[in-house]
Image 1 (cartoon, rainbow, N blue to C red):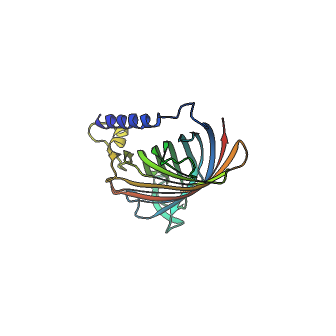
Image 2 (image 1 turned 120 degrees about the vertical axis):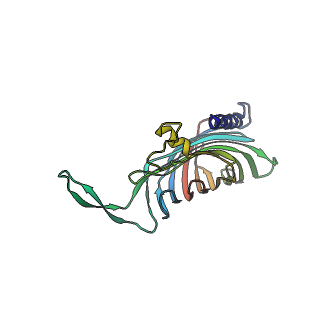
Image 3 (image 1 turned 90 degrees about the vertical axis):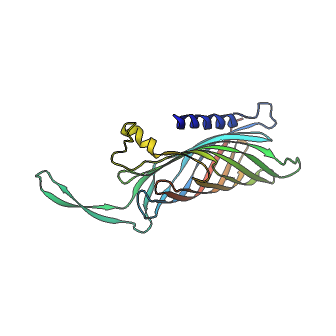
Length: 283
């Protein structure tokens, strides 16, 4: 009950921040729909599963919405990769292993199987709000300060569910933007989590904790609220955006993220991502 209460408090604080949207009278108010894709390379070390370093090649696909004015902007991005990624060991690209099973006649026999790739699901959902600081009307440099409400999910099947990581977090963020002429700009952004909730599987055959059934105990035993002392993550982005027409512009970006969670034998990962976004002005 305590965890639920704290999570409810975090949700209320996050929603109250993102609810401070610019009103309809703001100058140069714009609404943008985004469609994006790209390529992502993920490296993950999960000591609950294996001492080996694993890599995944992922093709992210997502949509987003953004509203902005002269002084602030907010938006949401939803990125989902349904079995579009491939996960494998860095050291062992392909492995054969043999196990013993009982056949239909009740006799034991050795069965050889090949393990090469595993499917991986990854999801990112981001709500953000930022307002302009250090305002100078004639300057081409713009600084924005705000926050993000982030949900990150990662799961692989080999064939059982492993590399499970579920993060719900509040992140302060800052963005620098420099205009290049009338139609183009470059930007960079940085964020890190202050607090939130981490959910991981305990990887036990019987996760019952004496108070709940197996299903509820699986999440109760693997769930923990965190601070920067118990969970660390950094998110960095650098991009270039240019206008294609009155309605369309295109956005190229490089994104890097790293996280470390030492609890329950620990998991750490980093990701390099290149993305391209097609943005259409709605009004």
